[in-house]
Amino acid sequence: MDEGKMTRIFIMGKAYDVPAGITIMDAMEYAGYRFVRGAGCRSGFCGACGTVYRKEGEYRLEFALACQEMVEEGMHLTQLPFTPAPRAAYHLDDLDPRENVLLQHYPEIARCVSCNTCTKACPQDLEVMDYVQAALRGDIARVAELSFDCIQCGLCSMRCPADIKHYHMAQMARRLHGLSASREPEHLTTRLREIAAGTYEAQLDALVAASVVELKAQYAAREIETESEEGS
Amino acid sequence: MNAIPYFPGCSLKDSAKPFERSALFVMERLGLPLRELDRWNCCGTVFSLTEDDLMHHIASVRNLIRVQETGATELVTLCAMCYNTLARVARRLDREKEALAKINAFMDEEQDYKGGVKVEHLLGVLQRRIGWEALAEATSNPLDGLHVACYYGCTLLRPKDVSVDDSERPKVMEDAFEAVGASVVRFPFATECCGTYQVVDRPEISLERSARVLRSAARSGADVIATACPLCQHNLERASDILKRSGESPPLRIAYFTELLAAALGADPDALRNQPQPEATMHVTAKGGAEHG
Image (cartoon, rainbow over all chains, first blue to last red; front, top):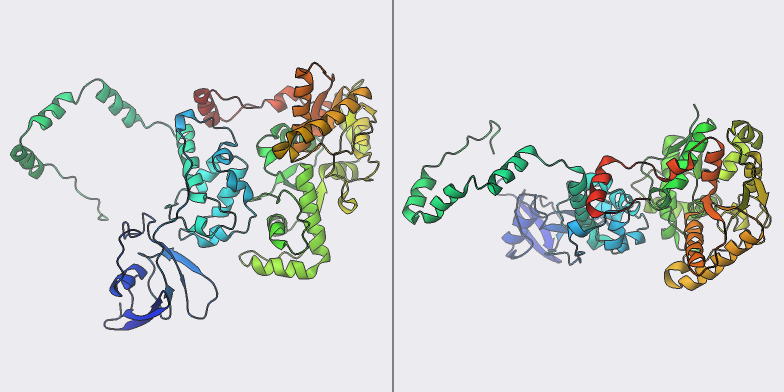
């Protein structure tokens, strides 16, 4: 960061000078905006702060996570707290996972005209249109693979001229894929068997019976696993 | 071995799998295998007739760009609707440079489509690249005594400039079946519409039209009616089920033309219909009790 240097930005059309080298989210807070919703993890993982901006002199709208993108001179900013996209209700165990199951729950995917606007809007650089197309032909595994890094920010759905709910549909595909293609991990199977057999009942009962003082003492004396060499 | 760029379309990966499997078998057997395009998308489903509605051509153009990226200049399709949409977009943009420029400017994340990709239907490839003699030579299991009625429907033949044959009196499918030893029967409804997407909104229209096609083929003495379109196939099957339930049972099968050709070239038709599923799908199927066709 350039110490003491200021950058001129515009928030909803009004000019502000903010410290250079800070993120869009920090810049808006610096200018007095409060993020009650649409802030989330502030670390680029949760997708709550998806936003749009425009650079001075450009006609294009750009897309980013407000907690990750640095402000630039002449940037035009706004706040998008939430994408009001409906989500299909289903129970995974009751689904008939045929090729058209995604189409049945999200029929609007058939409206895709392949304009690719969703892909251009993705702050994760996913091939969003390609996974919608894979969904249309019932390739659930491909949808799961292409959408794996989706953080559900909703910018794709906000931009789509066909009103497709890309990210909700893709989440359904990943769930179906997880159910059908992933192997059950061995340690999980073992642990579930132990729980069912009551292996941990006594330990749990002891915890429930313990006083607050005892619990605090146990917590303070707990074993902490050493962090990996690269750090957290 | 030469391979020819191939566009499957969504239906062939979903409801019309036997169409794709049998066509792949046939072309492999004939020494000109189909190679599926990388990263294809929906063809656009229907060709937009609104002059300035270029947005609805974009889906097709993206696929044509995928062909261009491979250095090829041709694309083969199986589904008659995909064929119609892709071929009409390709032709329009070869003619109208201004429309092409506008689409290219919109798709600035892709390389420009330069035009010139020829969209072909498999029937055309069989006729021009393989030839009826070669098809006859490759036949190991002639369809002797099988009476086939060839049903073209609309989108293989109309409009005229993308027709795979004479749009009033086509015979390319008949020629193929004669080459493999079948007896071709002519029937007057071969180029009538099956009712298409009316099946969604006004199913009675599709049923009525498809029933007329079935009855006409049956009256002409056909054992089987050959189709080249997943939607025609669907509508005819639906109409056939209803006719059977109402006691009027035209004694004929409905099959993709490639299924019959594959049988003539030595494929086991049941194996093409019920190919084993990948393990992952089987697991869910067993759980959900679903059947895959």
